[in-house]
Image 1 (cartoon, each protein chain N blue to C red):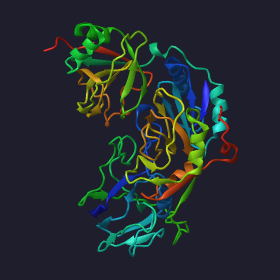
Image 2: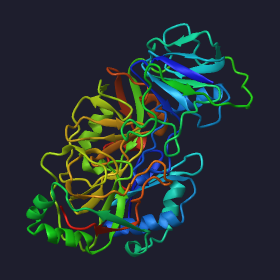
Image 3: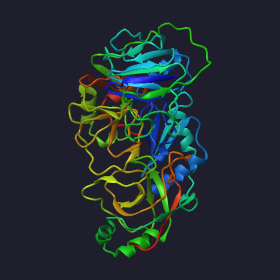
Image 4: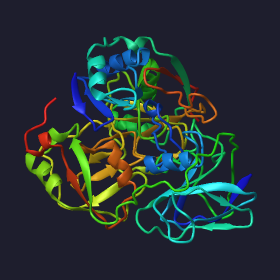
Length: 206
Length: 290
């Protein structure tokens, strides 16, 4: 783990891979060092933000170095089931890019559990990963100006569900009626780091 | 008890202490851009810490109240008769009108009791990037005012410095991706004047000046950041992130503005010049290691 400076109120911890990020994030969720107001996991890093009136960056660094990461999160997080109608406008094109029939892409997408690695891009937008996901999906060459809420999408090594209508460049393979970000719910975000996700095929495509 | 907006000015939003603790869910902190002026405004009218106020960008706000209230403005002092940094009674028959600021960019208007608009995920702040919280004010909007029994502080005028009008010197430290840049870029950052761009907003200050070139190719996986991050996109023109910055960013962060100085950044106007100063130990072009 490398500890990188991030101003007077934060430290950036850099790790070797996503599994290490998940393990450290799980440990930080269990026992959060005093004075830490935000923990932000990402693909290779975890950012820790402090309240400088409660703790110092020096104290935080030594607390973090004493922590034991908790491996195996991919099997223990809260499970969220997402029912999907695989009728996305990019399903056939994405399957073609990946060199397989669209039925095969759907079968693989629903075959195993995904893990929310981190959030970003928009409130409640979770980046879902899976160790055995074989595809690296190119983004659309021209992003859409508006992607409907509930769109189930692929990009790079990730899958995701658009929480609200927004611009987006991911390949849309289907949609769900599940509100993954609901302001009246606490927490509003359903796809939170560490949670597991199973996509379920909602039936035959029209 | 409520306030009625007659004219919103260029941009007036409701702000409080924001949404700390939810960045892992993709929800940024947001909240008042100039936290010091915001906290002072609440203190001067005896509000609880974290009460909601108005953040008035470049003046232009006009409003009235349906019953007598105590209000105060802090931050950028606006032209006009309204007292600044001094709690004042606004009567039901009066109109409070703020002209353009004399210096600075953002004025905080606190009303005793706080603004009681509905909170969204734990805060009344408008996050202009994420589209969370109340919409920016429009003419005719009615803002409910809360009640408080807390004592009024016995302060007539708070003696605070006005926002700086000329060139501003900001304290920075090396950021997490300092090693993605050659020593030359670090020297350029610490020795050049940058101009605040007109496309700056609550998300960030866009700066215009000598290019900051990277020495390392390849893409940086997105990583978390806080306000004050000096991020350098491929154009080489730095951006200093403010309250509504994205939770994560994919461009290298060369430096960080000290958190206390980010409040000063929030008062900078397009066209103002900024320079950066690092602590003595980081001034030489020695490579920063962890």
